[in-house]
Image 1 (cartoon, rainbow, N blue to C red):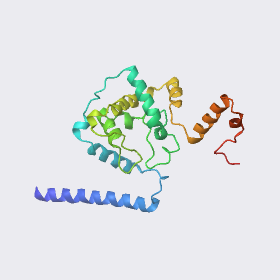
Image 2: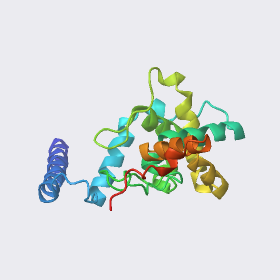
Image 3: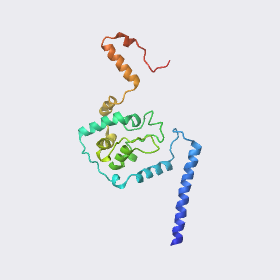
Image 4: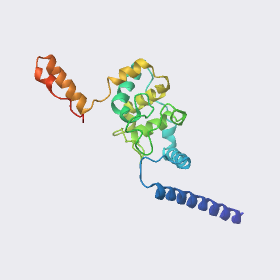
Length: 206
């Protein structure tokens, strides 16, 4: 019995060393470029580690915020303002940032995200994920972070997002400096300042 246990420990140790050795080789050959795609083994290991890193009590936590249409609107506005820059309004991750970080922003509509428990989604939003572009949005006591729980409801809704909701989110997305300058110039023009209309558009190269 003791011999079998020793053999099992040795096999597991070799498997761990082999896995990290393989990951080290991949890192050596691809460098630290964010353009490379994570290997399937790396993705699997990262998800398992993330799952185990979330306390069991948190994983099993139900959403304390009751769902309602008004709450969904709040979550939509919060997502459009804080999350869409990386995840896109539809949750696809198809944005300049989302496509070029490592690992790339996931498609939140797919099973890899939708199969997570409410508690796991909340934990990721509140605490972020190390060594990725996912920041920690929660502040202070997690039990008081109702905004993150509202986002969990909205993430669940992403696969059913309507075109009307997408159009609404476009108006709620943060504006770039150029867009703000163009809006200010247009407002000045409406107020009778003709010089604003004569200013060349900024941010364009010819």
